Length: 108
Image (cartoon, rainbow, N blue to C red):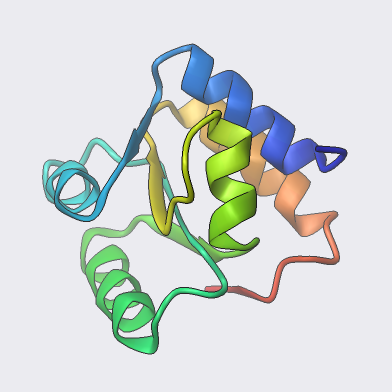
């Protein structure tokens, strides 16, 4: 795992500032607790649209980046399609590192 954004995501996970899973992430966004949402680049178009719309409604930064395997590996778990970072400091660090990364396909 050489990517700095993924490394930062792992640190956020170890600090307890990451939630994963469709229902949990949606609930976190609705409650205004999500500072950043990451959707796997290989997620379905419906999933991407759902999170683009939800994050736009609630003013949460969304990035479609990495594969589901890479996201899961960064967290030390099985593959993950959607992740929310709940800490603003970690979210800003990850966002900054995403902009330096050529693997980012689309940042809204």
